[in-house]
Length: 144
Length: 144
Image (cartoon, rainbow over all chains, first blue to last red; front, top):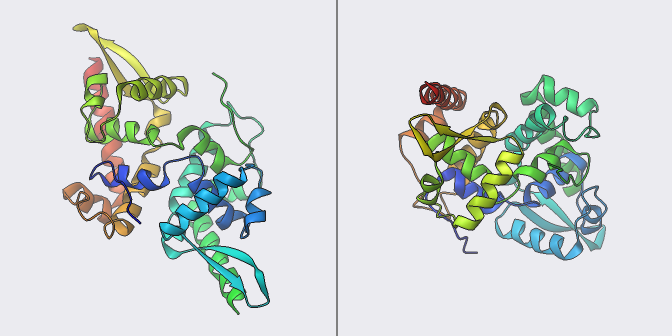
């Protein structure tokens, strides 16, 4: 798939792929909220429309950020999983959360403030490692 | 200004503000490329259309990510500067660059590969501190 890059800047080029309302949200839903089927994504708090979701999943697959598979035990459902390239977006996703936690509470008082946020705030590297380890472990189980 | 948040997730909420093609690009242009006037932004490699630029600058100002000012010596030109809230997006911008550098070269061979990228790759915390320090220093000079 041909990606249209605006210029040769590495920062901008990342946003040519990730710079929209949904790409990082879907990756976050997979990484943190264990979403893996089309139905899972439609049931998320973010409430994505099914036509947008279909487009975004296709893009994520074309960019090799997710892969599609079927379980041996259930050949009907399609499962989406993150690739290593997507898992390496974990530090970026974490920085989004840290910035939100610090700067958006004032304008968004109902924003989540649970144990995960506490962990993120106190130990961002640890939080990131935990997410990646849990994800890889889950993936290994799925494939067995 | 009322911001419409999709849900209570901190990660998604950050993207309700920053999740588009331009917001982080404009912040990057100010932080890394010393852009500060409307004309500066229009002359960037990314080639933003003036109507989109005007909208984005307005949004950035409403979200208190930039401030507008005039120089005592030049009352005609408007200068845009990053707020502390925007400077704290530096780690996020850095993660974008690191991810690009590692994963996009394959599909984008002409992507920048200069001394800054080398610095970023070898010492991301140092690169971030350097950017923030340089920016604050520049700002102090501008205001004197």
